[in-house]
Image (tube, rainbow, N blue to C red; front, side):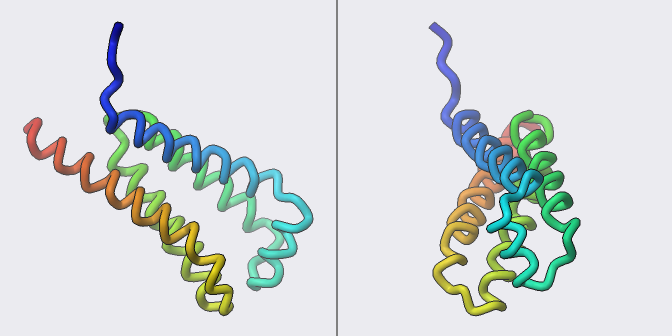
Length: 118
């Protein structure tokens, strides 16, 4: 039996999160579209967000591009947290801040692993 290193499982879980998030944004429900409108974003913005989340998921899934995926994921979550915080939706900032912390940890672990390898 082959064991999968926990860092791959961790990155895979983050990739799954961004894959799901990208899908929910790209095929936004009326409620999600209303959120974007309330925050002042244009109608096409959920498509851009969804596409960027899909790219982050793909980058996170591949060990060679995982650091770039962590960076993109961190930028997306920082933007999401900033959006809700700027609109006074304090409790809505918790999930993106938690994911920001996790994706930052993933980036740090990936960078550390790359430093050891070289």
